[in-house]
Amino acid sequence: MLAFAALTCLLGSVTSAGAHDAARRFAVPRAARQLIVVSSPTHEPADYLASLRTFKRATASAGWRPVFPAWRAEIGSGELRNVRREGDGSTPTGVYPLSLTMYGNEPNPGGLHMSYHHLVCGDWWDEDPYSTRYNRFVHVSCGTTPPFAARSEALWTETTAYPYFAVIHFNEDPTISGPEAPGSGIFLHAWVEAATAGCIALHAADLLRVLRWLEPADHPFIEIGTDSQVGLLSAGSA
Image (cartoon, rainbow, N blue to C red; front, side, top):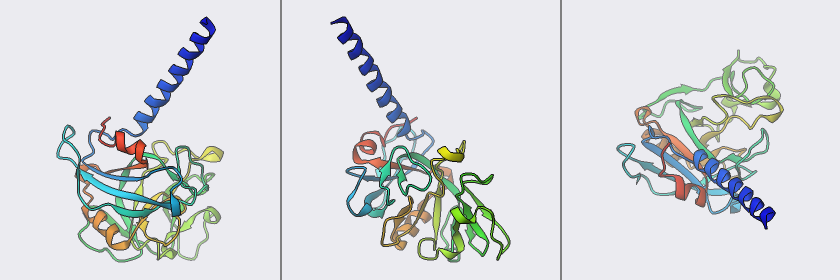
């Protein structure tokens, strides 16, 4: 009986630690006043589709209020994963800040509150986990093939997915590279009529509404997970 009690206590501690870790991963920082929530009933949604909702709050102690209607969003071919690896095609779960710079192959659409970079020939996102500039925007001379090219994205050539996009700060602070790299180049971009490589995609009109809504002063974050993961924790604070 003592051995059984000890095992029960140990399992209870493991379960409690797991729950605490999950709560920490899905806690929204107190500074955040804009929140995008992407979720599906399970980690393996049908047709690689999830729901994207937008929320805003006036202060850290105020409740979240919906902003736009819920929209369908495409996610990665590897579905939602709590532990991601470079190249597995999954969309990472958790809570992440959004970049203060937006990018796109189309001219600045206007109405943005963040800086905008119009992509040109030579603009890459380095996705080679053995590169010194892994998971960063990199510009090289047009016509030059950088050493990381084989495993990276030539952003200016991806006109369907990237008329406009925002960068989700996944695998940053610190950036983990090498064989255990969890991945790179996770964006909020335009609809592609298919599963993505791990990004989140919206129809172009909806994407622009979201991008124009985002305000740096409101510290926007995105929360990604199953309905149970985000439904209970999206209103939490860290």
